Picture 1 (spheres, helix red, strand yellow):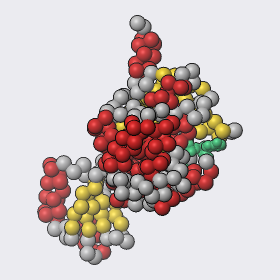
Picture 2 (cartoon, helix red, strand yellow):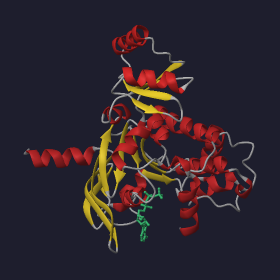
Picture 3 (cartoon, protein in one colour):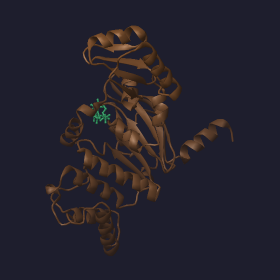
Picture 4 (cartoon, helix red, strand yellow):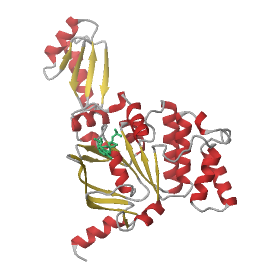
Length: 335
Ligand SMILES: Nc1ncnc2c1ncn2[C@@H]1O[C@H](COP(=O)(O)OP(=O)(O)OP(=O)(O)O)[C@@H](O)[C@H]1O
């Protein structure tokens, strides 16, 4: 087998893989050559700001729309030439598309069981099992229209699982949810991977979500993957951490600023940021300087870089956590 054949074979045996995906709408290039290789049983997070092309990527990989060029395989099946086999293996959730608000949770699940041709008994068993696992048993006979956002998201994910997909696409699964509901969803997602070994392709604007759930994270910006790696690897891409010294008055701050000439001073918060990687040796050296020079700091805090810093460095923008509800609202009204 030559190298090219080996590369193509390994691309096809990953749970999800893509080579050179491109997609434009009119003049707007949304995806400008995306390559992916996601091993089975892992969680992959595609992170990007509003409009970066996350949903478009999911739509292509789940056979909803066609790429302009490039290739993609899901569980070894080509999304273009073998779309039916791809659809048999996947579940897609996140936009509430499948949930019917006029039906009860149980009816929604039974409808899904019918679509998957489960027999009547098997369908009922599967619905009951999922209602229990997602703690929706008490609400099973209530109309979904009365559900909270968190309950709807849980039901949406439960419906996706009726057909026992091996590969699940979660498009912004917790956008707009309160912190508690978000944690519940995270736990359900973690259990899915741990108990059933499914592969998860997650899109999110939440850096914390990617950090919490994903084995690997890719950052999508202006149609390209600008970085890919584990959360730790991505954090290593950016400048190291710092120590923040807090002062009670401006005189103390000025004195200290003259001692640490590499520091950044903030007169408003009366603090000084000194680059430091947080190792014991470096912290000890810093404390020794503070002691020997009589710097009068009130307190010291250590800041290690997080994914927020990575995102800001890579995309030149703050992450979108400040406005979580907007994209979901836009999608629901548009689609
Ligand atoms: N059917 C379409 N027709 C024209 N433009 C589209 C269409 N679908 C998406 N776009 C545009 O493509 C770009 C990427 O959209 P997409 O929904 O993939 O982004 P996203 O990363 O999922 O964003 P968000 O976080 O806001 O959901 C946006 O500029 C969007 O307006």
